[in-house]
Length: 323
Image 1: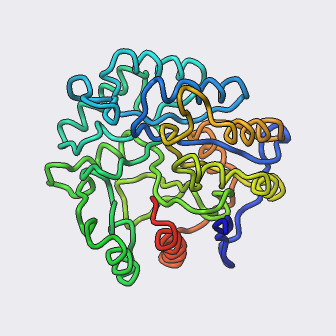
Image 2: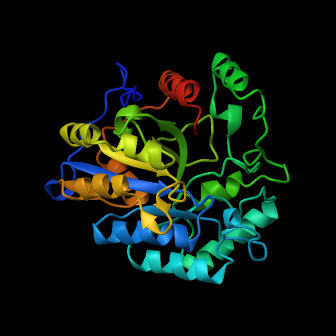
Image 3: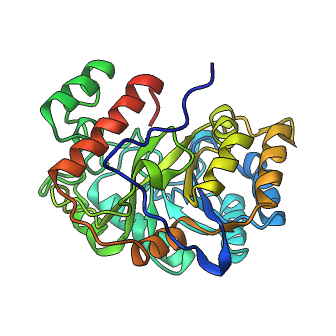
């Protein structure tokens, strides 16, 4: 039985947003760079460009020498960098996925931000955090506030992420919270099994006063690999997204099964081709979040909303075990 694609609960009603140019809904993707190479990614992005989609491509700027494996391809690789810069010139947004695939100290993170700006013309506006990097901000069990929520999370993850991340801790060798606050606008956090991301997190982008190093958090929809992506973007879910006038920010890794033996997956082509024909607003993550922020009723983010959001994500985590 396919997992449910709706986790909307009473009391967290999504705002009805009027999209630009009479569009019926909004759609974008944040693509994490794990395991990605030019060979694994080029066909996906060629298809997206040909069908009018725009997305945000996460990268590791790289503050070390050339990568030693496909998993560690960074912008220090000349061929990869040429491809990524070409994507930027084609209208895709370049986002941040950490300084490198490995844990970085503060000096390495600061140097990588400068590399990013030199390569792409500005600091990253939207970022996602690589789950293996211990310099992540408010990560692991620190994504949750309530004691019971943290306890359940730690039981599920066998306590391996208990206070294991340090990027938000002033004075720690991995601290870079001040840099994030000064240079980054949007940071991804919770992922949900709902194609309408704004229904799962109606108040994104939001600032959490309990986590001051991040200016604004955003959520995303579960599409971390080919199977999850195509399940989330089923015909029924596309119809519902448009009927609800919603917005989807898909979380994905285009290196995870989308291209096999040089061929783009047929089901992905079918679903994305169908979506391209619908009356959607296809933009980058930052463009979408900027628009939502200026066209949504004001709200006060406090303990009640935080607990409801954390509880919703925790249920997703308990059920699916993904980000």
